[in-house]
Image 1: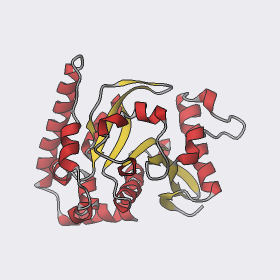
Image 2 (image 1 turned 135 degrees about the vertical axis):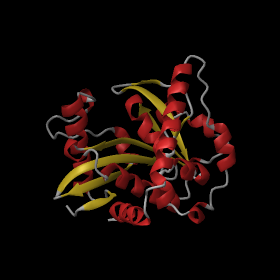
Image 3 (image 1 turned 180 degrees about the vertical axis):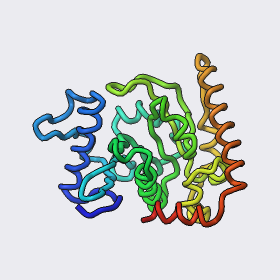
Amino acid sequence: MKQGVRFAKSESELRACYQLRHKIYVEGMGRFSDKSNHTLKELEDDLDKNARAVIAIKNNTPIGTLRLFWGGDTAFTQEQIEAYHLSTFKPLLKQDKICIVERLMVDDKHRGSMTALRMYKEVMDFVVKQQIEVVLLNCEIHHLEAYLKLGFKPFAKKYNYPDVGTVIPMALVVGDYDHLQQIGSPFAMLLPEEKLNYCQYSSELKNTIFLDREEDNQFKVNKNKIVTNFQKARNKLLTKRSELFEAKLRTRLCA
């Protein structure tokens, strides 16, 4: 398979995505064992027929993958409507303005690399091309800080996701460029503001996305602390960062 990061097109690339899922989720984390094909060592489900998959290949080996559901491809299932609180965004957005990202994973040997961010670059290129206004995901608690740094915001109560555990519904308002810049999200560097002029409902979406958690005050405190600490650290970094550094980062993401 050709090296790089892209949406999977061929049957072999899709099978490679399912095999990496099995390796990481089933063999590595003990998840979805009852849903995986242990003979083929592939984790695939009925939802995959309506999903797009991103794959990262290095040295002819899959090292990362995620899957994406777009309302412009097919109607969201009732399960997705409930799991991702899609009623929150209706009637403001048509379903082709919404996409869902899930099952993002990177092979152990490549965690801490640019792989996950490069896969998200593919997602954001797709988002802009299809003029999507909000990106949704369910975040595990230990990944919260990483997604806050990207620009996602919690917008609903945490709940128990089958075979995964506690997750937090999070949303990225694509057109909220000021927020992306303020927190130093790499998306602000990868997406010039003029490419987001198609976004019509950014203000309304920002008002829609809020935390309504009477029982989760401690979570709010922790979230605010994470954001505050990150912004302070970023401001210190910005005083030392050179244009050359950002150019190198952009080159690595786009390679």
